[in-house]
Image 1 (cartoon, rainbow, N blue to C red):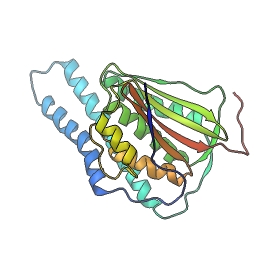
Image 2: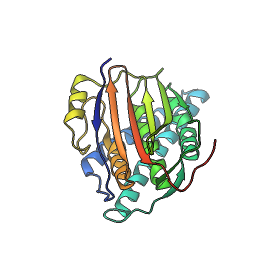
Image 3: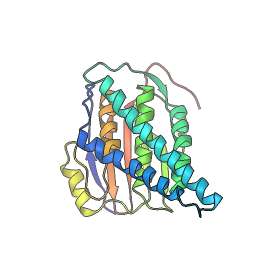
Image 4: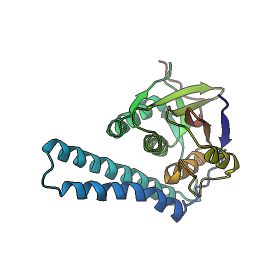
Length: 239
C-alpha cells in the first residue's frame, strides 16, 4: 500500500493565534452533541441505562470542549513569546493522556491502546503543551474513525529524537484529502472529508514552539499522526 507523507511544521518557537474559522469549525461538533443529548434526555420514556449513557456522553463532549478551549487560551497567552522548555518524561505523559481519552474512545466503540517504549525517554518540551497536543491528536482520531477501529499511541526512538505516534485503522483518507494534505502549507482551512480542525491547528503551533515536527502519514487503510521532539541530552531514565 502506497503511503503519502506530508510535513506540516518544522522548528521555530513563535506561536500564532488559531483562526476563528478553524476554531468555530472544531468547537461546533461537541456543542452540537451536547445539544442533541440534552434533547434526548428530555424524553420521559428513556430507560435509566439510556439516560446514564447520554449523561456520560454529555460529560465527554464537555471535557473535549475544555481541552480545545484550554489549547486556545494557552496558545494565545504564549503568542510571540519565548516558550520555557524542560525535560519531560514522555512515558508519564502518554499514560495520563491514554487514560483520559480511553472512555471517550470506548463511548465511540473504539479500542485505544498505549504501547510504551522499551525505555523511559525524556524529551525537551513543555509538559502541559505536549499533553494538550497528544490529547488533541487522540480525540481527532476518535472522531474521524468508525466504531470498531483500533487507535494506538506509541513512542518510537529516532536518532537524537523521540517520535510519538497516534495510529488508527479506520478507512483512512479520501483521494481529495490526501491531495489537500500534499498541497497544505498549514492547517488554517478545514480539510475535506477528515478535517484537522482546531485539534491539528493547535497541535502544529504548540509543536513548532517546542522545536518539534508534526507529520501525517496517510493511506486508505488508516493514518498516523506523529510528533517528533528532541531527546534530552542531560537526563536519561532507564527502563
